[in-house]
Length: 460
Ligand code: FAD
Image (cartoon, rainbow, N blue to C red; front, side, top):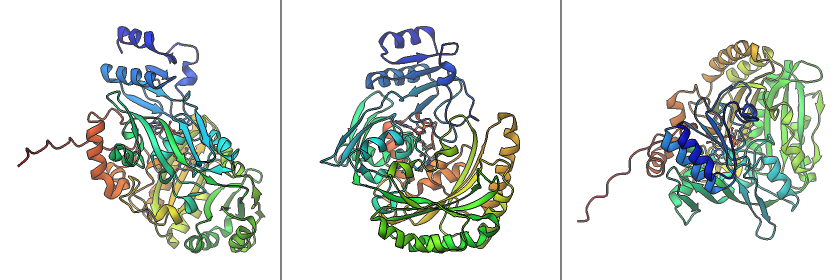
């Protein structure tokens, strides 16, 4: 970056600019994943849309690698880079709830716990992530799975409009009528198309909910997983069932937990979830009525803790065969860190009834998103834990599909897997990318390579 170019940016910039050596730079370059240790040339904390335009202009003029950071929570650490520009949206904290229209307008740097607190004050909510400090924008752009998806669809299914700044600095207000192609691409195409400075959501009445874990010992994990496999397809839209193999923080031993939720009358939920709570002989059943925001932060420890070291692999599966069951139980018995986990998120109900071509998000069949998550405290031990995860993943992967939830794709996943994850929507996404980001400025993401727009044929 040339000094004159930086001086020109600084002259008109309202937010904060941090370079190596500045106070606060070391904090500003870091993201949620402590294993990502990178040193950008500049962190631009934008205060408004004009700052976003100026920062994008600098990245283009100076040929800088660009990170767009919303919540900073992506496991691969897309929110930072070496030697480039970080466009940080953490000051974009607008949340405006309209309780009558049941909508919310949300800034591009808002976190789920901030949005949930505001919508719940009006007895409302929209489908959002299960770890409360994840960014609303980043999660939504990849699809957005969460506790409300069976009943209300994915986060993208509730997105009504967005404000986007594209690579050329133009500001677009998009929805189903205005620039419908760009709006379509934002709903599952990840951060490939521009900087999303605000998003508007449909909200739903959500009061007290049922939620919590039912924990079993690891020596019964195979039978619990087989029960879980048979349970999921029977669930009504209101119910959610995730499953995790993790280490009990008190006892320090691996266990298996059914993570249950119900979005409807509590008494009704008690009935629906009863079989899952009565199966086998659980060590503990913590399912209880709770405020929605409590369920939304139920998995925060340790997943919301900034700076822990992480490495994460993931794929979808429509079947949970006995071999996969045996493999994951074996992996849990060999966790190298008590913070590591294997998680199953079941995608079903309203989230799976939207036609594949209606939004860019392609994974519309009932299926499990399977995640093997390595998480540890000491950076000096990274090799040991990543080696374990790679070996574990190699065993699990052969029982899974060659596609994943796009928001969980790792940087070392093969390009074919990235392409497969966008499914039949990839070609259209590539054409829209070619129209709005022909030079692939927005490439630190599950990347979609642009296809140049076809020249118009002269009229006959
Ligand atoms: P960032 O690192 O800031 O951004 C990640 C990507 O999103 C970047 O490519 C960036 O370009 C793009 N992006 C972010 N903000 C903007 C913006 N305003 N404009 C344009 N592009 C933007 N996903 C779910 O669906 N459901 C879950 O329950 C869930 N739980 C998770 C739990 C944990 C612990 C973690 C690490 C991830 C989880 N995810 C979940 C995945 C999550 O959705 C993605 O990691 C998402 O990208 C995080 O968004 P962010 O804004 O926090 O991340």
